[in-house]
Image 1: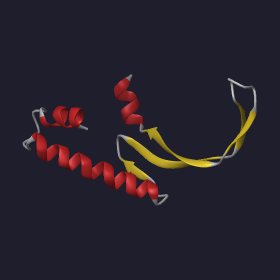
Image 2: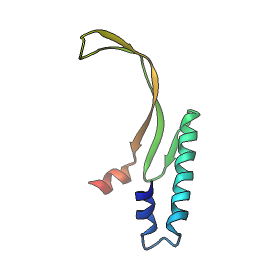
Image 3: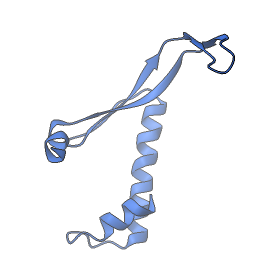
Image 4: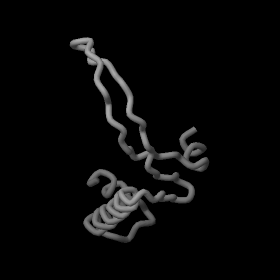
Length: 90
């Protein structure tokens, strides 16, 4: 978090202190985490969409023993990058 806060605070357009930027980023990430915890999607235009993906239960194999094990169903955070972000990277 501190590294991102340092990058944002050092941009020419920013007039906030590093501590203030870090607090704002922490608040933003907490809000995203809370929304995902409630099963909501969070879209940041031009950046991407955070969502929750459901993974079904499955059978896997323990590589050490060869024994079959059941991996329970679970939910996992997912992110899909916006076209603008993809274009900026390429």
